Length: 163
Image (cartoon, rainbow, N blue to C red):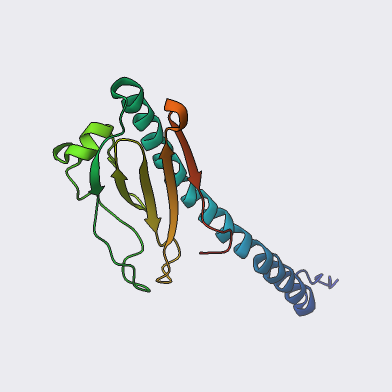
């Protein structure tokens, strides 16, 4: 008696349909994933500027003056494909008198370059970075004022599609 073996497996059409479905899902998922990654990277700037704002308010409330002076952490030029990240903290934050007075430092590799300029009655801080390496940096800004002797801070984000 001869038994017939049953053929098992997938046809070529079935495999092509599965590959097409995976391709469609990837085409939808990858851009969404990249947007989520960019949004997550942007939070660094808001968090660090918020830290500068809180420390500046403490200084203003104790000394009736913002920290006077100018400080930048790293002079970086943004060119497409060259410097996208500030990969290592190069500034000795503690030796810079302005950063030390603000009690501000970044201990980890970061994506933004920070700057501060202050007078007795107002101050400005910035966070500049190129998150997608296209040579176009985005800048978050912090404006510190003291209307009627009350320290206040406003963080301004770049437009949504600026980077």
